[in-house]
Length: 357
Image (cartoon, rainbow, N blue to C red; front, side):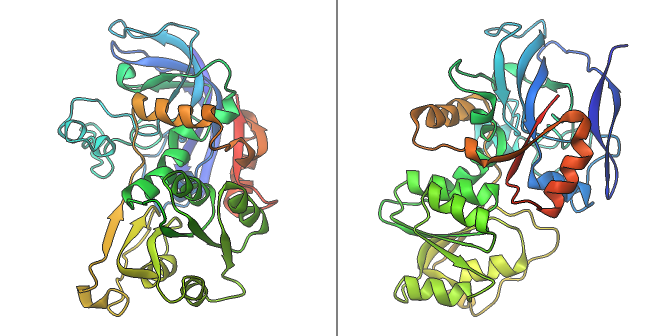
């Protein structure tokens, strides 16, 4: 049986490069030869054991590649075609998909995982940090890459661009809104870009890392609060003249950022939560105004499917958002463990790492 290199979850604290069989292709599947992928913050949660996956799983969920082999029932694609697939790979026919919530496609019956059912790649099935990736329900999920776009230009589409934009979309950002984005990692930066596209006229970022602050300003942040110097809640209330923000996007997944995001909302404002939380959350009663403030708290898992990917690549192609500059480091797959160390420790101003087999 032919084999490939893959980054495999062994146990908390250990993701290693090893050999695995190249997957067999079912009737509705497609086998993709990976040309570029990357490491996501969620992969770090997996590495640390904060998000449970099966031992032996190939991790990673941001694929760009070329179709190597198509299942017998797949139509409309050709071998050798450049494609991406979202981190979320809905079947297209589940109750969740038909209700318009494809990210919650339903539990994977074989794995037993019940949360975030549409997220299969690198979660309940083998992922993209490998030489090859099996994409299920290929006709619902493969999206051709326009020839004039590079791998790195579309690398953010499968997950962080979709997730960050979803934070703004679910927050229902409107023209003229004031938006605060707590944490300017890759997803927070995409939330900044998404809020700007949706019409926000004042965007306030919160972070302390100089490279992230600079990137946020390039993508549309009007103000950035350095939380290591100033209290972000006090600063945001000052910047808004005491009014508060229309939408606060939480993009880190900590109690502190969640509470702060809630405290800066105007009456009737929305907290749009994108963070992956590794423990229970407490809603502060005063910030929640005892449940009487007409506020909304909404959550998002990045939408997937080929139509979502097409729309995101159209945004990139239009030039309205340029995320290629978020790739700050490049590694080959055989250095994946070194890349994980860099990304987990957030050294050297790293934002995103391009991994090329």
